[in-house]
Length: 187
Ligand SMILES: Cc1cc2nc3c(=O)[nH]c(=O)nc-3n(C[C@H](O)[C@H](O)[C@H](O)COP(=O)(O)O)c2cc1C
Image (cartoon, rainbow, N blue to C red):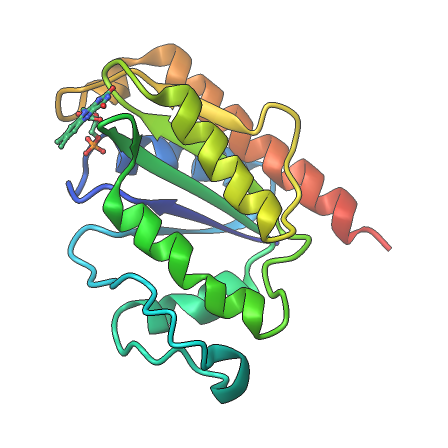
């Protein structure tokens, strides 16, 4: 059982990195092998709509997304966390999402993986951002547990570590993701 946690924050060791890692800790304690992927410092361009991915079998953009495709394919569950910027997920998170078009076009490779969302923002935009992340997941054919999201209301760097409720929620989300993936993988 492989669970990936992606943080779409450009701020390394920021609140999103911290809370996504906490969700992964929940998943690990529930028996999964986990991997954290932070997008800070990674170069992931937006999709160019080249329309060749269905034919060529390779995304035409040679950037850091190439190394992420095999990890996404091999995973049983994917937790995506994003800071909220002007009421929505970050550009970094959206670029990664759009680039998963390649995985849809080459055989619906995210189908039946478990998904969950984490949003981090001081105030506004949690509902839209979480709803968007969950909508993306269902469009890719992913399966979501009940209450498939966790929220942090932290703004200052590192504040989430003191946000007990959010950290607890994230850990529980990680556990529940593994429970559902186990059910889906059961013979
Ligand atoms: C460009 C920018 C826009 C932001 N817009 C919002 C917003 O619309 N709503 C909100 O609640 N927080 C907003 N914030 C605050 C961040 O979401 C918050 O600081 C968050 O903790 C950042 O996550 P990180 O520590 O993982 O980078 C914004 C921050 C930046 C830099």
